[in-house]
Image (cartoon, rainbow, N blue to C red; front, side, top):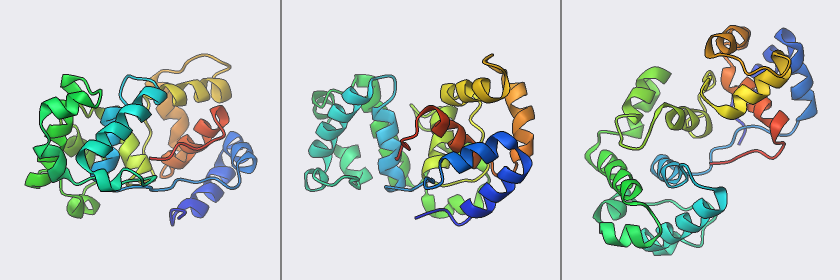
Length: 214
């Protein structure tokens, strides 16, 4: 389902920025979509860190089959945090996870099980407060937290200046091919507020027309 703010955001961006206007017209039928629950989405992000998409998919399928066999056939499974927390490290390692990632997943599960991460309260948190709560989990850094805010929480005004894809797209469209600094990126993006997630989405589409979904 399209985020409620999407049409308002695209109209505002198209009025303010010629590049945005062109990109929005070029990709008229794409928008952010939420696909899974918070725990599963974050677990998937940890599994996929620093490895190829193919390797991540293979390990993810094994991981899901291990911790939630009944969910393994679903395109977007929902994993119970409790099942991950009680899965032995040896079993997690047998899925192809490194010892560090297996520990990260157990730590993530503990945060959900103890209520240290409680999605019911996230609507009351601003973006920075939610990022701070997420990076308290081992294995979740700022970039992962920002991706979660954009793709799962559908927060409208996130600007992930450390994202390589966004850096490349802004270089192509705003800086004559030169990689911008974070300060330069924020200066350009000031005109996009409060819809910087949407602008980021269209800049990603300029590099890869097929949307990534989490």
